[in-house]
Image 1 (cartoon, rainbow, N blue to C red):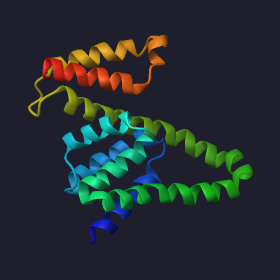
Image 2: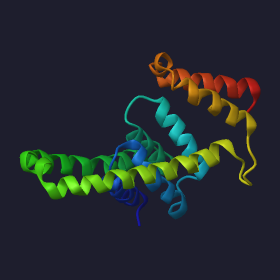
Image 3: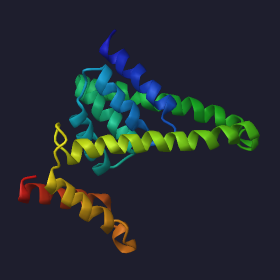
Length: 182
């Protein structure tokens, strides 16, 4: 199959089924590491970091980055369009039937089941990112990385610090990584 078409269709599927926003794309992006030669699990962890540190929706940034990894700028375009296209179609349909759609008990029941399933998918993806970020491939702890995560996580629970822009945390993490050669 043509790489551009494969990128578009792969990200179209992700866009169609990644209910819950950007983090919900992670399980699908992880699956692509197993089924496509476009990027590795380690590169996926880098994509998450880069996507979080750049402006725009994380899912969109990740699609663009993944497409770029696979095929350069044109790949970024096809992956991004593939991710966005299902949302555009669904939003047009939902907007047309919004009044009835949101009050439909079957739709409400479906979303009551979808939300916890998406939460489980995101949690599984987070655990995979933790493995790649905090442990070596043979699952030995990277103590410096664990220390950074152990410091940042509780600091983000402090109300005043939670308001800091994410870029502050990325810059701090990058600085610590360079200084301590993590």
